[in-house]
Image (cartoon, rainbow, N blue to C red; front, top):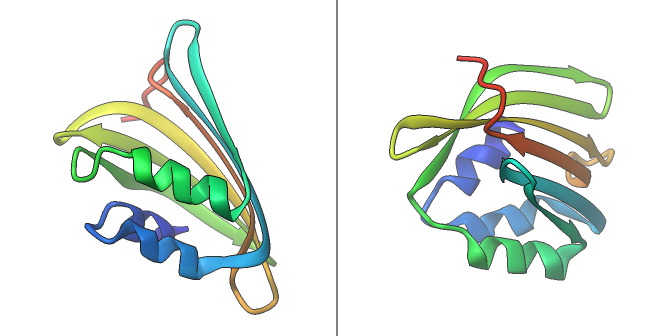
Amino acid sequence: MTTWFAILDSEDADRILDLISDDFSFSILFSTGGDGATDFHGGRAEMEGYLAQREVGVRTHHLLSASTVGRDELFLGEVRRHGEPEATFVASARLTDTGRVRRLLIGRSPSVLFS
């Protein structure tokens, strides 16, 4: 997951598509606080759409803690907007035997900051 977020924060975030499996599926629950939340979900095509709508260079992802158990990776991080803490997120991924991301689940909220 550390590589995933480093690529996501780069000028060439589309390289993430090289990390996903053929049967990739994901859900990113993106909360901006209050009752406002968007669930981005689907497969490769929907991930391409998610990447296209992002504000490149505005938000960055910072590791707070991570663990790996077998093919499962868990990541706790902080989203910063122009360097200022904006939200906390948790991410979980299940990898294939070859190390590609097969399943991805991310939840993000500004309501609880860990910093």
